[in-house]
Length: 214
Ligand SMILES: Cc1cc2nc3c(=O)[nH]c(=O)nc-3n(C[C@H](O)[C@H](O)[C@H](O)COP(=O)(O)O)c2cc1C
Image 1: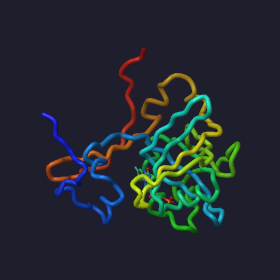
Image 2: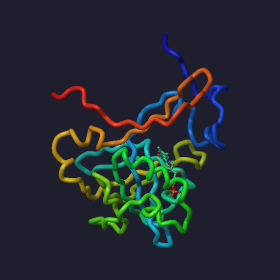
Image 3: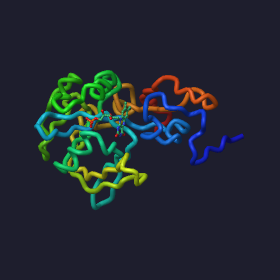
Image 4: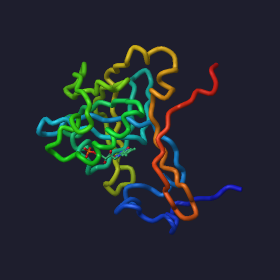
């Protein structure tokens, strides 16, 4: 039997922190679709580096270009930085850095150097004036292309960026062992523990385990 979930938030889904269901659709927790996590680096207007923990994104393109599609809170520093400077960097880092990544959410005021907050090392980018994260196994340097307010309510906006260049650690470039193992892409699941009570349980962070090779 399949549970049907409609566009209305179920009554048992109550905010666990103020505004949770303003920022998130109930579908997010009800479906729990996993997403690769990464850090977006930008520069604040005062020149201090900004680091933003990010998911809910996809990457694709054609012969005309390769693009990142990433939703950002309109009120976030990252969104404002991207609109102002038109450039940003995507940094994939392994799950052992989950704690430092999370720190950058809590200590992210205007004066903060968020590389220092997370204990990350700055590495110059090759094409844009935004630092990459040295500890990342893969970084994508991006140019802003467009934005699209997802719900029309001015809360989340889909940012599309064109990837200008990528830097990949040597031992991650061949094969899948590193990329799709414990030292590779980190995933996040927001699945509920108990749908009936709306209990969110714990955050789930995962890495991949290759099942088949063809
Ligand atoms: C696992 C995880 C994934 C996140 N993904 C996103 C996201 O996709 N979009 C977003 O706007 N915020 C996301 N956030 C929240 C931002 O990291 C957070 O709002 C951040 O502090 C914004 O920083 P800034 O104001 O310096 O840009 C995520 C947080 C966590 C813990």
